[in-house]
Image (tube, rainbow, N blue to C red; front, side, top):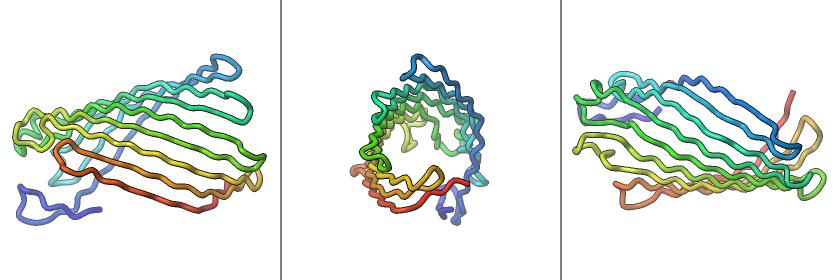
Length: 194
C-alpha cells in the first residue's frame, strides 16, 4: 500500500482500502445469437484511519449485449452507470470529497482467426464527474477521462490450457492536471483450468 502524506497530519500514514461488493448478474437470451445481460452492484470502499472520511458507498447498473455475428466473430458491448457517495458530515472537516458519477462504456471484438487462435480487441471509455461541494477541494467541478485499448492473442492448447500474449494502452486525464498519464502493459503467459 502507498505511503501518503496527508495535509491534515504531521506524519505519513499507510493508506489501505477494503472493497466489499454485492453483485447480481441477469441473463436473457433474445435470439440464438443475441444475449442480453444486466448488472446491478452495491458496494462499499472502506479506508483505514486517518483516511476513513473517504469511505464511499456506491451502486452500479448497466446492460451488456453479446452478439455472435458468425461462429468465428463475437461482439460484446456494454455500459455502466455508477454513483459513489461519501458521508458529507465526515468530509466537511477536511474539505476533501471523492464522491462521483461514473459513466463506463466498453466494446470487445473476438475473432477466431484459426481453429486454435483467437484475437481479442477491447476498447473502454470511462468518464467520472466528481461531486464535491467544497470550492477548495481539488475535486470541485473536476472530472476525469480514461481511454484504454487492448489486443490479446490466445492459442488454445486444449480445453483446459491456453497461451496468451497481449498489449494494453491506457490514457488518463484529470481536469485539474495539465498532463495526461499514459500506461502501456505487455504480457505473455499461460492459463490452465483445473
